[in-house]
Image (cartoon, rainbow, N blue to C red; front, side):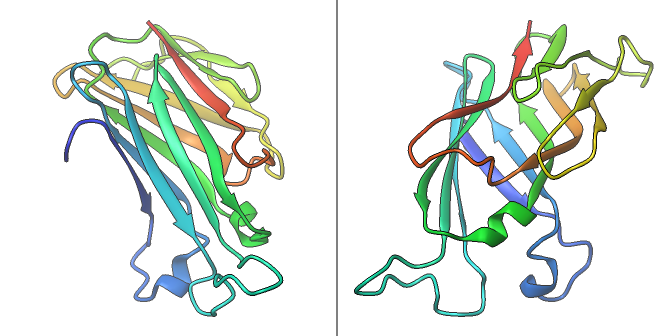
Length: 180
């Protein structure tokens, strides 16, 4: 994968059809540009079966287009197209993996809630307390972070970040920050 890319991956859980898994959790895989440790990527979503995504003469189609950006150790999202696609609120990001992290983080802060958690070491031992996410429409859930020295990767698990955070079109929302 080319550095500077964010790739949203739909977890299919062995589903044979996209329609059967379209509300399954997503994983964001972030491949940092080695020069400035930044990345960006797009996520387009519609219902996958109708033509409601098409623009009509009197209204825009039902679809959503999001851009994800990672820069200055912060992951953020912004809606580029928001055309009343309510089903996007039913899809959550449950995991983020960042490749090419040059320094071991000391902690990660969920900027939506203000909670901070420390990392687990390579043996899986807790180095700090779990943070608690209070994401709209989801109960509080613990999330964890693990840094791997050999692959220079950071894995964030147990997230419940809704695709539709309720932000307005073209308004950037910061999701979490890695503290080094």
